[in-house]
Image (tube, rainbow, N blue to C red):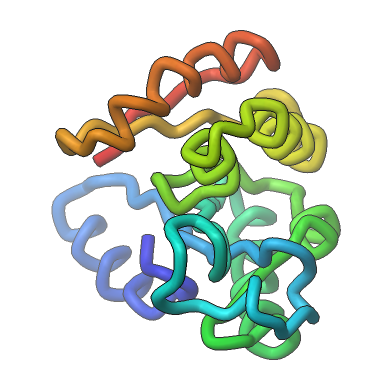
Length: 174
């Protein structure tokens, strides 16, 4: 997955096919904190207090051909209608193009993880439940990583509780 775009898809796809590997195409999207049309300090990417500004990260994978088309629509729309320092999607855009996609909650930059880092478990749960409602119960996964970071060690046990609470499966990535 490329950050905010699909520029590496063709090379990746062709390399996978050379070795009879099934490629999984997706993006690490930037999700607006409010809407993709907002352009204010909270939506501005760049240095700031930890977790207080810039878009969230969200992993979106194409499940099938319809999902492939929807990931293309999401990334194109993020550039055309959501660009503010970074190409951004929002809940409304994801709702419009949710068929055939799988969504992972993202890395430490994701909405769920950022809420947990702020100590707001209710907001983390609300983000996860809303995304699960948008893409469907079986198409939303809580993503967990362990790169030895203290922040990951703090949020990972709570991520497991959130997954259990909403009945979501988990995926471990790196």
